[in-house]
Every structure is written in C-alpha cells, then in structure tokens.
Amino acid sequence: MSSLPPTVRSVTVPDFRAAKGARKLVVVTGYDYTAARILDAAGVDAILVGDSLGMVVQGHANSLPVTLGQMLYHTRCVVRGATRALVVADLPFLSYQASSEQSVRNAGKFLKAGAAAVKIEGGERMADRIAACVRADIPVMGHVGLTPQSVRKLGGFKVQRDADRIVADAQAVEAAGAFAIVIESVPPAIGEQVTKAVGIPTIGIGAGAACDGQVLVWHDLLGLYPDFRPKFAKAYAELGAQATTAIESYCRDVRDGTFPGPEHTFK
Image (cartoon, rainbow, N blue to C red; front, side, top):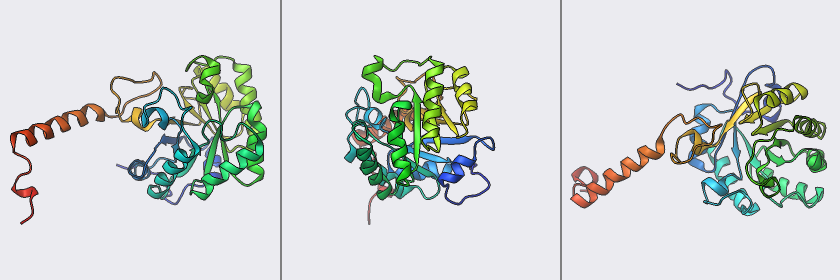
C-alpha cells in the first residue's frame, strides 16, 4: 500500500520547507530512472541524487572522484523517472568550493537538467556559496555534521560530536537561505539540538529520530550490499541475496538447457 501524503501533486521547495513541525519528511537517494520511478510511486517526498553514487554505483572508496558531468547524467536519469517527488542533486567535490561564481554556474546546470534544488556540503565556510545560489534563485539544501567530501580532512567517515560547531554551521546555512539541512553522523542529542535551533527542516542520516525527516541510501534500504551495512541504515528488504539466488537459478536453467522453454520463444 502506498504511503503517499494526502496530495499527490508534485512536491515543491515551499512544500518541503513548510513540512517542518507538520509531518516527517521521507528522502531516499536514487541514481537512475528505474529507482526514481519506484521511489516516486512509493511516496517519498524527495529523491536525492547523491554523490554517494561514487561508492555504491562506481565502486570507489569515497565520493571524491565523482565528476560534475557524471552527476548531471544521473540527475537527468532521475528527473525522467520522477513525476511527483522533489529532485535534489549533490554538487560534487570541487564544483563549488573555488568561488561563489563557480557554485552558481554549476548549480544552475542542475536546474537546467531538471532538478528542483541542489545540495551543498559545509556550514559557515560555505555560507557565501549557498547565499550566492539562493540570490540566483537556485534552491539549496545544506549538509552539516559529517560532510563526506571532507573525508581526507576528517581522517575517515567519523561521527561528529562538536555540538557548538554543528549548531553554528546549521544556523549559518539557514541564514544563507537554504530551505533544508541534512545532518549526518552525529549523536541523537545533537541532531535534536540542531533541529530545535533552526526554522527549516532537518533531514537526518545517522542523526537520531528527532530530525524533521530521514534519508537513506537506496542500496542500504533495499539490502543490496549484505556484506556492508552502515550502523544508521535499516534494510527493509534483502534484495542483494534474493538477486544472487535468482541469477544462480538462471545459470542452472541455461546450463541444463531448460531455459529458454517453448513459452519464451517466438512461433
């Protein structure tokens, strides 16, 4: 049964922002047309085209190798499959850090590709980039706490515990004009503190239940990688194991000569 909200019209940035305090927001990463169609039909509020595709699609150890062109390609695929959910696209590493001008130019490419908004990592240090995009009428979702593009500086994907800094980052992101903020890998108390400190929705990933919404990676949610499961992720299916079993059956049928059968051939 679908969990669609009362209205099935397309979710807009103002709709998303207005949900704070009214209802919990559901966000899932998706990287292609098929995923977008499934997520859209299931009733998610937003599909995040995350640069996490560098790891779960491309097989890298982190998101740093992902290019602007690759993100635009995947965004276009998702946009073609999403008719209702809000599509938000990550600005990848080194596509916005150099200058506000660079951030506006590259963020604008995602709106031209059909996305409704972009996501920019970083708090106070990236507030001017966010503000520049907002002045150019480009909606921005912020991202504080663990920022994966800072993995080299952080020394790995580590839980972030500096509450004062994270709250200050979130408030700077809000002041710059962002319509929502992702909070990643922080203790629940900090997730709750940030959520109370800002007037825009907070979307948690490993940040506790007090956030205004949650986001999970498509592959984690579906159990596509049974040998790796982040602590913050819950698998709602075990499709990785099921897919392996199904393909093993296909291999046996082909080798035994039982596939294709008469029902699978043209007359």
